[in-house]
Picture (cartoon, rainbow, N blue to C red):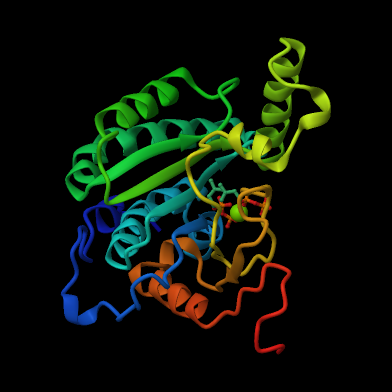
Length: 266
Ligand code: IPE
Ligand code: IPE
Ligand code: MG
């Protein structure tokens, strides 16, 4: 079956904020997660089910990425981290890796005006070595253009690995110890947090993973140490605003304890 990319690209669903306000669920102010991370998984399976190529699945995910950003804005989420390409994804076929590099760069390029209009501050979390220079250049350009936007920070996690991030933080701290800036026996949790890729971004409150897989695959291990986890069965290209809002609603019913005993003693 031939893949008609226009069908998925040009969107027969609303492409932009804002939805009809009557369809946006009421989320109580101050209760929604401040920072949501999404492991956008299942593109390959979505394509396979339709007899398409894996890369067609990635293309079909594009409108869903923007529906998800719109849904987050509409729910007043302040930070959204999107797992786009992991440090382990280099182990895929060279042609898929090549596609994902070109596609990530092109999406940012094509959609930057739209994101800017929405008030999105674009950020990047990931490791520089190995990542294509053209991708880094596009991300840095987008960060610069959108740096004053305040509606939502959208963090594209590209060439991101949680272990790599922690190793990079440890190496940066070791250098400061070597340079005599801090003492080695004074390494604290705060110091680790301060050396992550985006130290100003608060911890993750909610991690959503699509496609039914129940693992976190090296996504934000430090930042999401106390996050609520929501594993949803839908493959990412089948998702959209409704799935995101459902997860926010689930989160509102969770009881976060952070290791303490609630005052009621429950
Ligand atoms: C997620 O979908 C996208 C990336 C990891 C880049 P997958 O490509 O992992 O799709 P599945 O898990 O093989 O279905
Ligand atoms: C996690 O998905 C990475 C991204 C969504 C970018 P994977 O599909 O790479 O994870 P595993 O291999 O199933 O754990
Ligand atoms: Mg996968």
